Amino acid sequence: AELASALPIASTTARAFSLSADPVVKAQGRQRLLGELAALERAERSRKTSRTPWLSLAFALQQRWAVAAAAAAFAVFIGSFGLVSASGDALPGETLYPVKRAAEEARLVLDFSPETKAHRYLAYAERRGEEMTTLIQQGDQAQASAAQGTLEKYLARAANIGASLESPQAVSNLQTNLEQNASKVLAGLQTSLENSPEEGRQKARESLKSVGEAYGERIQ
Image (cartoon, rainbow, N blue to C red; front, side):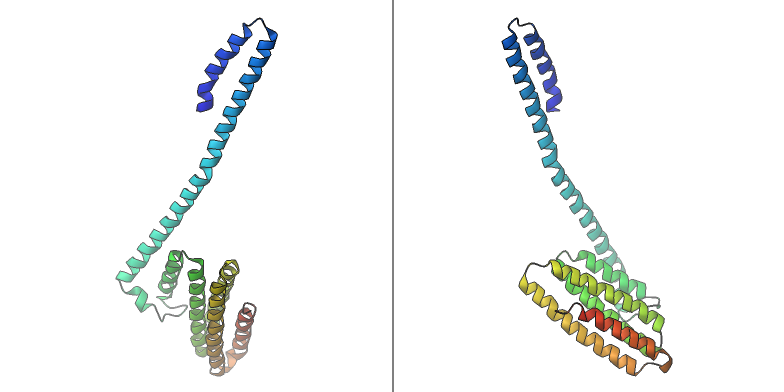
């Protein structure tokens, strides 16, 4: 806009210089004019560039808060019907299990602190381990494998966040939680293996080994 408004003035100035009989004056005027136009163009580019990051940041924050608001509204909605509490013990394949998982995802969206989110992932990994324990004892290895996949995915996400934490204390706290988490999950899976149906025991051993390796890779 500033550049456009300056163009008529520049045009008038150019015509005035073109009427001058002195070529030196004309040359000096032309040089000044080009310099002023170049300065205006630089100012315009600088103004647009400086505004863009703020607009991008504002848009990103708006999107994030919109997602958080939707997650909060969802949590309040299902909580008002007592579905979250009722789904607490639900297992993969059961009617209320999607409600349980949706409530977990809503809480993750509301965790703005990376450290808090990492600990949340570990807590949900432990839940998947508890589900695996029950399912293996029931002989439902298919659903146990599905829970195992989510457990290992959550461990990876927690580890990725942990790698980006700058505070040594935060990293130490996460490692301590990870070790405690591993101890509980692996102990539960060992018990489930001992009490599992014979026909599913080999698959259960493979699951226990895979989960143990997933924890081992991330414990420093």
